[in-house]
Each structure stands twice: as C-alpha cells, then as structure tokens.
Image (tube, rainbow, N blue to C red; front, side, top):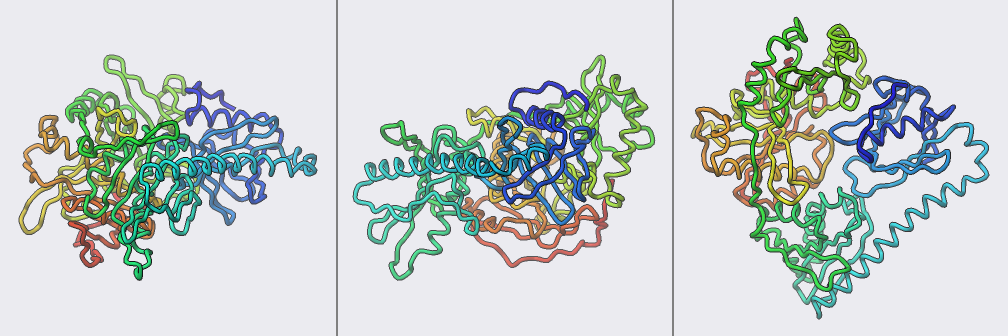
Length: 573
C-alpha cells in the first residue's frame, strides 16, 4: 500500500487514509451494514484508484468535491454514503455516515475482520446495544431541545396553542428529524415554526430554511378547510451559526407568500433575538479578474504542448478559481495541475492522490496515466463501472454544456460562457465566504433581443435545497452586476445586459428533480426568473432536453417539450 500523504486531521482525505490504514491492518476486512449484509474489502487498500471488484460488486472510497464517498454498485445493489466521521472500537471501525440528500447522520456501517465475526456471534447483542445507545442519546438530546423550545415559545407568545409539535422524521413528506416543527394557533390564525439545536450537523444548518418552507407549505395544503385556519407565515428559531445563511436567502423570498421571521436563540439564552432581514441579502462579493486565467494560458502554452501533444483537443485546460493555476480536465475530471510562474510545477493523478510529475516518472508516466483516462472516460467506454468513468459526473455534464450551452437553452449565448466562476464574499457566514458558480452566461430574448445574465446550477441527484443553492449564486451575481464588476474584470466584453435581475437555470436529469422543487420556487420573489431544465438520464451519450419550464412572478406556464432546434446535441470533446 502506498503511504498516504499527511492530511489535516478530520479532513476527508485524513478520514480516508485512516479507514484504508485500518483495512490494511486486518487479515480479512469486511464491511457490515445494519441490515446484516457483509461485503469483503480485500484489496481495497492496495488499489491505486481506491476501488476494487469484490463478490461481483465494485467498491470505492474517494474524495469528491470535498466529501468522502463510499460507493458500492453492481451485483444487484447500489449504495452511496457520505462519510462524516469514524470511531475506533478495538478491532472494529464504526463509520458515521448519511445518505445523499439526507440531513440526519446514522451509524450504519462497520469495518472489521471476517475472522472475528464467528467468534463474536455470541456478543452480537453488544453491537446492537451500542448502536441503540447512540441513537437513544441523540433522541434524548432532541427531546430535550423540543421541550425547551416549546417552553420558550409559550413564554414569548402567551395565549397561543402550540400544536403538531414533533421532531420525528417523515421521509415520505420530507420532514427531517434534525428540526423541531409545529404551529401556533389562536382561533383562525396560525403560524408555522421550525427550530434547530446548536448541536446539529452542518448539513442541518445549511438546510434549515428549505425544510422550514417544506413544513409551511405542507401545513397550508393540509389545514382542515372546515376550520378556515390561515397559516400566515413561518418562524425559524435558529442558533447563531445558522442565522446568516438562512437570512441571506430569506431576504429574497416573497414576503407576502412566505412571511419568514427568524429568531436567534439557543436554550442558554434568556430570550430570542429577532433578526432584521433588511440587514441581509446584500452579499458583498469580490471577483477574480478574467485576464489572470488568459495570462496563465499564454504563459504555459509551450509546456501544455509538451504535456498534451496530439491529445490537446481531448483535454480541457481551465484556470482554477483563484486564477493562480491551470487545471487539466477530461470531461470535467481534473487529471493534472500546473502551478507556479518562474518554475512551474506539474502534478497529476486523481484528486487526493495527485503526485508531482518528477516523483512519478516524468512526462512518460503522465502520458501513460492520461492515456488510461482517455481510454476509459468517454461515452463509448468499455468499462462504465470503472471509477475513472464514474468520478465527478456533475463536472462531466458541466463540460458538455460548456462545449455548447445551447444544449440547455437556445436562448443562452455560447460566445459568453464562463465555467467555475469564483465569488468570494466578505460575510461572516462560512457558507457564503467562498463559492464557485457552475456556469455563468447570458440569455437573450428572441423577440426583443434583451440580454440578461444567467446563472446555471447543475445537479444530478434529488436535492431539496437545489432552488436555494441556485439563489446563493444569484445573490452574488446580482451584487456584482449592480456594481458593473463583470465588465471591469474582463467578463462579457462588448455586452450591455439589461439591468433586470439575472436568470437562474436549474439543470438536472428530468426524473431527478426533487418533488419539492417547484413548491419552493413558488416562494421566490416575483422578480426572480427561474428556468427549470430536465435533461435525459443518459446525458453522457448526448444531452437532450426533455422539458424546459420558466417560472416567474409566482406562475408557471405550460410545460414545453423541447426539440433540438436543428442543432447537433451529440457529445463534443
């Protein structure tokens, strides 16, 4: 096994290294799930690509977009878990993980030696007791938070009846157990509330507003009409760490539709503090000048010729977000980086396993690695289960749209497309401190010729928070455009877009949009136009738009099934 590089403690790379080291130390490592299934992990720690075929299934443990993902597919099964933390218990390693899109983490996975299982059958109850104890402790914490939240609301709003109060999850209705929810009533008037403990995980902080809107919408739809109860709005009761991210987004929701109020509170506070949404929504942002990337491309041109040779047309060269390095990508997958000016350094490999070229065998070794990537990462790949084919699918889709943005909408202008645009924010909210917009472009009205900036957000999995993630980048782009920052930094040369707010494009496989997406979009301000684009499931074989819907001013026109308008939508490299 190659000795892993030292990583910051607790980082995804560090977690992966610890897991692989644990696997390597076991004679017969196996992965156990709550359901009782056992899968061999033999060879995983010795695989250069951190992937192995075992018992007819492919197992991989990789860092993708700053997240450690454990994936198992094939042999009639498919499992994807995001690893949050690990816990060593003697010869066992407990993995705390969650499903994609799920807020609540669960201890579902355990790595141990197969030889210990038979000897430990008699103590199988201990394992169940451990899991039950952890789950019970988390449940007790949430029960206590619910009790304290209800007591605070009763003190602050005397005379109101607090009903339907619970923190129980309901996946069918998309209610998360991370939050305490309920409503307060007085006669025919009511308001919804949703509270978050300061001890919940970062995902719960990120998703508080969207789960609050889902709860508000459900209450309004299911209120007993015979009682004629009016649910006027939503109160979010949040710890300090969750206030800014929710408030920035809530500032651009329709106040008449959502009626959002945010109270900052934890059980240690005597009283909640009302948050003024007027202080939020204006996300001060700075932009990396476009010319930095162009200068790097020119500076490294001879070196790129040496590295890529005849493969230059099959590898995309992209300046990184800060404009200080070049990223070499094959259908969105970064395979190498060039950094430094007077003495540029080249490293290559998959993210988390990148090696300086001089240590890995020089240009010849890079050419060998690149050839393997090009052989496996394309739509006609002979091995679609290989990690090099499966890694970073969202970036693959992004690369296809960058080749021709008209694949998403013929109104988008292909001569003005900027991928991975960095937007650094001067806010105290960590979630807003740095962001990278998937694609920034311009849309042109066919009838009037009016041009508006367009933010394109991509997603391949069902994600209830997708509309608000798109709104995050919309906030940044609007702030920059209002101050003419794009032209000053070399973007959109020669254009004078309309002062109208940018357009948000949400692009996702047609059947992968979350069931709540359009419900959440109904709460956006009327001035925000959102175009929902559903593409085909096998988009690697060529992107086809199955539907395109424009939502604006709280309305949605009839769905339009889109034709390719005479354009070639086949894959381009």
